[in-house]
Length: 179
Image 1 (cartoon, helix red, strand yellow):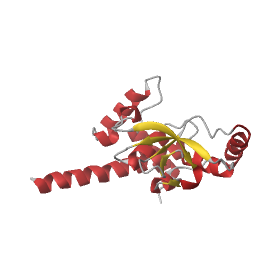
Image 2 (cartoon, rainbow, N blue to C red):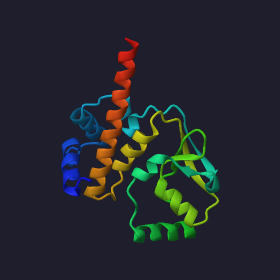
Image 3 (cartoon, helix red, strand yellow):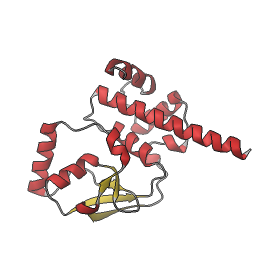
Image 4 (cartoon, rainbow, N blue to C red):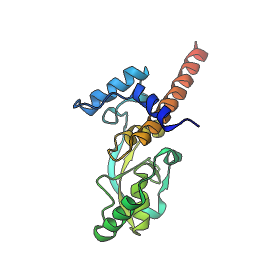
């Protein structure tokens, strides 16, 4: 297991230093440093999502995508505050969940789903997105969450880098096999 300091060093090598650049420019810099200028590394705003609309879906039918295990947890006190607010207002957070077209698999907003369940909400707003690479989508968007610690951001960045490397190796293998 790598130490947090090693992970931070690796993340620093792929993440640009904080600046006042726009988020899209920062993602372009990350793509150049990592060396993966493909659709799989596109900034969330440049996503290849072909279907996107908001629907209110039943909480009882929603389940987390496997990538939820790669998303850092929220501090217990913050989760308690989120649940209390959801119980009082019915609002789970500042953004809707993101689900695949099956309308059951959540690919982003895992903490908000936990809040909705704890607050015993019947329905939550969800963006239905036909995302071709749900894992990359979730990890890219997780990096944009301002509440992450440097260590958490480093771990997520490393997981994203490893995932994208696997995707690109697979694509190169398919290209080589077709030639």
